Image (cartoon, rainbow, N blue to C red; front, side):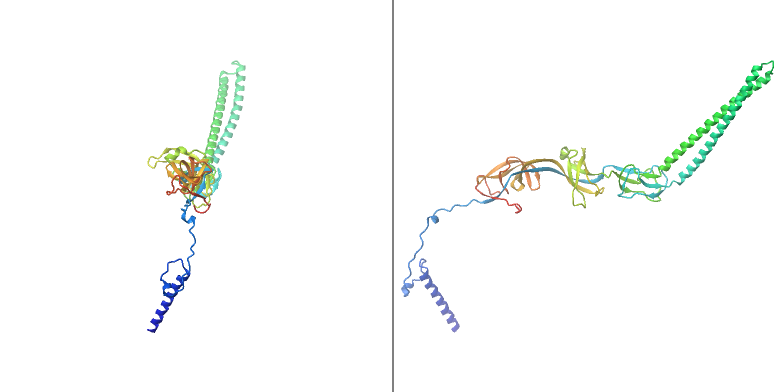
Length: 420
């Protein structure tokens, strides 16, 4: 009970102190209680400051601040995105030119760079070597026949000369000295010698023809032996090796090797049909290959004029400037530079687009002005203004719906790197 009375007295004392302080020290405030009637000292006079004219005048509202940016001239490049598969520009198939021989040696592997006429593999030539030995023997026999025929010709010519002289002497002596039978016998001997000479010459011709046939056989054998060495028809990079040791080579079916001629690789890109007329040969391109951080330069090498009826896309071949890291069959993408020109640039955020047209807000003498513009190339965060805005004019950086033509604004230049 005592504690309650003490608390009540304390609260009453604090309240009375507050009333007295308000009475003495805030004379301009309305008194809470008429303390002067209860014996309190007189309240001081109120000395309130006079009301100023500025407080009575209406306060001017400051225009809103907007972020602006200058329209500037810069270089624009119109790019077309393409994608497709990496293919060999020329895929050379190397097959054996002689069949039914066994592969006994492999001299090139996948990825190897080979030169023209370099040996890639060897086939078994033992059977051909045996035929070559037979041909050598037949050739030697033909040479012996030629020598024999030449000897027989010399012998026949000697016999013919003797028989002809003997017959001439018999005719000169006449029938009074030589018997008619003797003259006829010597004539017959001469004719026989003539026939023997003709036969010897025919034998020589046959022997020489046989020799030429053996030479032709040998030439054919040498060609076949040469074909046991499988050689690269062009310089390039081996893209696939199908040859296997011990396998029987065949002229048909899977080739022993595939070679990328000169190591040249193209991107076989798919292009939407509406973009095909804009693609031209030798247009530069920038390609991105799987597994490579750095882009690879290229250029358009070929543009097909046929469009696939199902996909409505055409084909373009883009040559890689550096194919050392390209793998056939891999997916790749890139951009083709269709056009490059100088133009007036504006941030894409400053434009309200409607197809190839749009509107921007221009700040002129602190007031907002709406302009219709024609748009061109879009590159990164900028869009090309073909007409409607000139370089150097001030644009609202972000097209805002709360701004209207004629509104007054405070232009605040955009700080580069401030995130818009």
